Image (tube, rainbow, N blue to C red; front, side, top):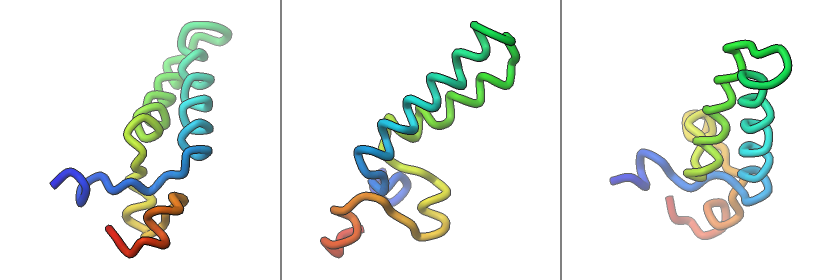
Length: 73
């Protein structure tokens, strides 16, 4: 059930970049300008942690090599 809702569609590099970007954005809520917009960083952290991007799913995209070539969804 979860694989249909959250298919693995992110490559490892994509996941690392998302978590790094998310941590950078989240730091804006605590350090620097201390703006609440920094909490937007939670989204890329979560998508990187679970390995699934809802927008990739909607548009039928995938950066995960296993999802492209194996024929499994």
